[in-house]
Length: 379
Ligand SMILES: Cc1ncc(COP(=O)(O)O)c(C=O)c1O
Figure 1 (spheres, rainbow, N blue to C red):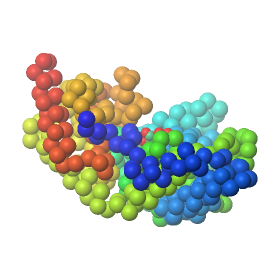
Figure 2: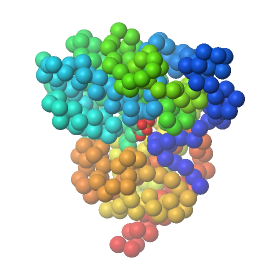
Figure 3: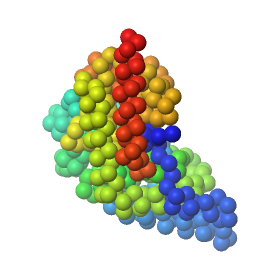
C-alpha cells in the first residue's frame, strides 16, 4: 500500500508512539488524582503544554488541549458569539474554510449572527483588500485558515493579522494543515486564536490544540471539573497530549529537510503526470503552497473514479477533504476558485508526508496516468 493522503491524517511517529504508551499502560493515572500516579500524569500534561507552546511561540498558559481541530474551531466561533450575545455581531471568514468553521458559522447565522464569506482568487488566496472592504463597525472576529486542506494554498495571515490587530478585531486562524509542516509563530502571525490538530503532524488522533492569547476571554466549552483551567472539563487524554508534544517537536526539528523532500516529490508528481497527461491542471497556488499537498484537475474524468481505481492498486489519495468525500457534492473549495461543477468533480488530492519515498512517487505517477487512460478509453 502507498499512503498519499497525509492531509487527511498521518501515521503516528515511532517516537510519539513510544512516548504515549506508558501513559496507557503503567502510568495510566487520572491527572486529577492526588497520589503520585495522578501527579505524574498531570506533570506530563504540563510538560506537553510547555513543549507545544514553545513550538508555536506561545506561553504554556495560552495552550488548551481539545479533542481535535474541529472542536477548537467550533469553540472559537461559539465563544465570540457568546461574548457578544447582547450586541449585533458580524464575523468574517473565507469561503474555503474547513467545514468545522463553515458549519459553525452556519449555526451562528441561525441565532442571528451576520457572517461574511470572503471570496478567494483563482489560486485560493484571500486578499487583504477584500478583508479590509468587508469590515463593518460591528465586526468582532475574522477567521481565516493558514493553509487549505484541499489545495494547500497558504494565506497571507501575517499581513491580515497586522491589519486586524491595528483595528482591534479578533483574529483566528485554523492552522491544522500548517502546524508541524511550515513555520508557525503566533506572535509573528498576530493571531489571537489558533487551531492545530495532532493527527496531522504524526501525533495521535483525538488531540487538538487551541491557542488563545492570554488576555482574552474564553467561555467554557464543557462543564464539570477543573481540567484545562475549568474551560474544558473531562479527564484528560494524557497519552494523546504527550504524543502531540513529541510529534510536534519532532516535526519542527525535521521541518526544513522534510519540506524540501516533499516539494521535490510534489514537483516530480506534477511533471510526471504532465508528461503523459498534458491537460492536467494544478488547482491552487504554486508559490504559496504547503510542501506536500497538490491538487490535480483532470479533463472530464471523475476524481472519484480515479480515486477508486488507485485504491484498487493500493494507492490512497483523496478527492478533496475527507469530510466532503463520500458525498456527491463538488468541493466548495474548488468551486470557490472559479472552477465549474464538472471541473470541481474531476480532481484528486495527493498529499505526501515524511514516510513517502521518491520510489512511491514514481508508482503513484504511473498509477494515476494509467487510471486516467483507462477511464478515457472507456468514455
Ligand atoms: C483545515 C482543517 N481544519 C480542521 C480540521 C479538523 O481537524 P480534526 O480532524 O482534528 O477535527 C481539518 C481536518 O481535516 C482540517 O484539514
